[in-house]
Image (cartoon, rainbow, N blue to C red; front, side, top):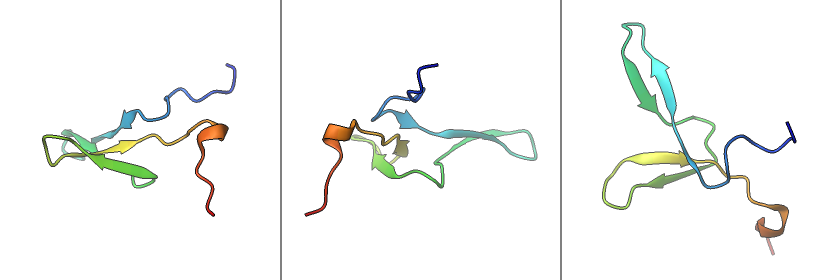
Length: 60
């Protein structure tokens, strides 16, 4: 392990949750820092946000 994240910057992420009835459902993480909607759909997905240091936005 080199300390780098297992998920790459910009990858879509969702949680797979098992309900009490045993059903598996996809959900957005409540801790998502960035969320996008699909281009041809109204389905949202979380986006892992961890850009390289030289690409981090700096407020002016």
